Image (cartoon, rainbow, N blue to C red):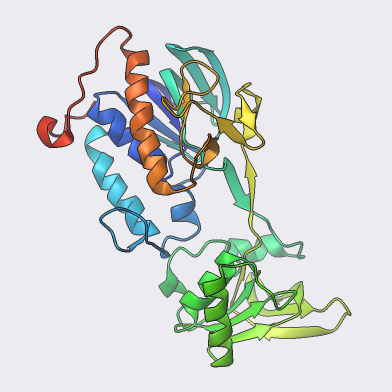
Length: 338
């Protein structure tokens, strides 16, 4: 059912940075609504690596990405921000102080300001060109995101790819599943330390390396996978017994209609004034991995900082001429829901 919502700030993107923006805005008694193309909040942290540890979140020596998202949800719960999930923003009209956004599901959001926290934009997996792929995707025999590590307990898992995701999940699953890694060459693009761990695990018999091969075909029936066929460039083939195929060939990123809004950009990133996080369009702000400026680091913690900077700048848009008296959260406490 389509929604018609009025709010102070429309946040496009419900990843960790977008979630934290709800908190920073809420602390200034500004209301917000979250809009995201994915069906769940958390962005890539939730969709791609919920059980992968993150080591550079302050006060957490290590925290799983999924747990970080859960904690952020707890933090923003008092502000009761509406969520329009599984929706893509298709239109933006109006001007600073009076924007109207529309979605592909027919929703209308009227907002005083807009905050883009879209990461790399709407994203999806690069799918291998295999016959019958959709049927295996529907049954879960082919997965692009590992939601729960335990779901693969005792399974025969074929992992295809040579980047960080392929290597990280091969290492993470080696003690609970029979893991085979398919890659077209011996050199991996993953972090050197991870690649070294993979090599050691292969030499120790914990992981089977299937090199140099590429995916050729899937064999099974009614969505039940039995074998993954792989082939060399010379046409030599092998059948790998498998219950699950995890193809990790990267993501296709797309800013979608945002790219047509006329915002100043540097290649695929939106340029902002780092002092306010405002884009070239007055009243439209951007934070997180989608933005660029001198000294920008693609770190979640810097996105959190940008959320605070943007919230304070947006206060002046929502309440023009009203002075904002900065207070620490320890003295002002947690405001009620806005």
